[in-house]
Image (cartoon, rainbow, N blue to C red; front, top):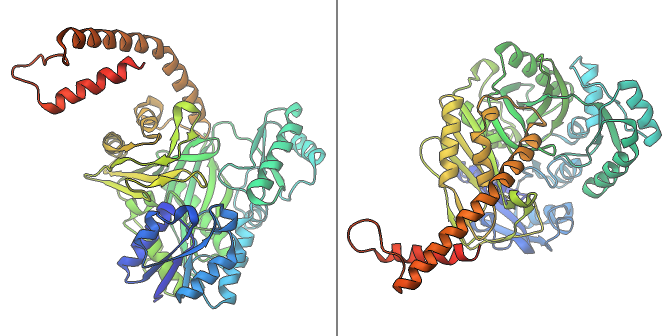
Length: 507
């Protein structure tokens, strides 16, 4: 077994891996940039090492700094988490050259399956269905025109090295191609250092469903069911759940076996995810493979009672998988939402700043994977995700109810978050009845904006009337208005009314 692991990441995923290490009796080592010195993952680690200034390109993305910290700490392994260097084969190779175990797939498998174009080529070679599109990167916008004419509009331009919706543009008609090409290639270059694009047919109302796989170094590969990830904002997943509400045993088996076949053909080891689009007729098409642990892995853990991080570590140490495909059983339903420091009312603009207070949810079926604490300052240098809130229930209805209850218990002071936005999603009839697709959330946001705009004026008038009445009452009596109930007011009630008056009169 490994004895000391460096986590080459930050935030909630670093905390998640540190907790797994502690349970396994493995020492956990954190790394941090100047901006992250006070972060929770640094506080929780057995040791912590500075790796550079705040910008990730000068710290978390510098392989030499990561390897140097691992050597200084005497680590025998590195876990990359997700994001940053997690899908960079250069880190895996640097680990091998330094005699350090990389907790992830071997570099050749990462190169072949982590590249969207080469993964699609391999998928077609082993008869895994793919979305119609180009198999090679497109050389220029003229070639994109020709490919789109052959496939038929609408199409999607995608970054070869991309992820998280970056470097993606939908093209409805020929007149939009040049601007879409320019924007997608520029964004891809800035995000990944690689401007190359490929092209796919755009499916109008598909579901995004992914299969979690696990593979060891002894030739055993299994799948752990699926996750529904169709609730997305601009191609970025927002809510994930397991199992998918539209899944059948036959479709699950077909998609799972396709994922296992593809992973085996690419020599894959460790945890990985094959992502698919599923159309309204339940035809599925391979989209890409994420050669790392996913942000949404907790929902799979909740319905399988397995710890994917611990299994990753055991596989990296050379152990066999402790279960076979027939041992995998799904129980209940789990839903996850990603809590961000952002303002949904202001076009989801990031909201960095100090967390002045924090009330965490709890109770039956609730899990919170967090990387924050009261008093911590959310930096503006990185992704603004604060935590992941997961609810499990015996069925989807109970999972939704528990998640809604937990969101009601969640309070973050000092910054804006998207917690109230999730409450509105969970109350929407389309979501409740699982009538969603990859464009559904964008449509919901537009409806949500219109509703808020319609309600804004009456609400403002009501607030002004209340404020005026309270102000007159307080002025005439020389004190806050008396309680309608019997007996004298407590001090906290008086203070609460005083704050209400002040807040309403500012509207």
